[in-house]
Length: 130
Image (tube, rainbow, N blue to C red):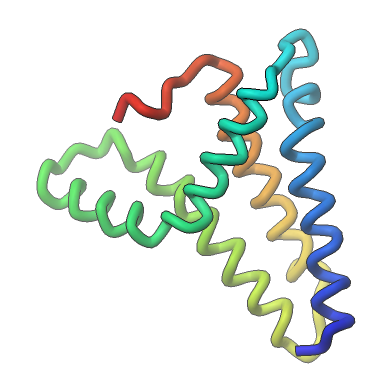
């Protein structure tokens, strides 16, 4: 793992996260004004998804097995974005030749995860309900 490669990969990702966090909601619905509280709520839930995905997957699978309620399958699919992003970034750091898709797919997945969270926040979804 070369320091130059780490810089080449992390700086565009940081810019993507910053743009997805602050400017993306205007692209989704320019008429809606969001507050500082909405910004913090989105980044909080992104952080929870980023570090909590292993537990969320295990608990979701157990819930699916025990209750056999398939209403949470969509949420399970969305949670799978986080391990996919991490796996692709680790792959991009350790392969000899970095291909375009090694970097493009994590960028698209990061933007997709922000779109999903922003859509819920801007539509008034209460994450604490359950």
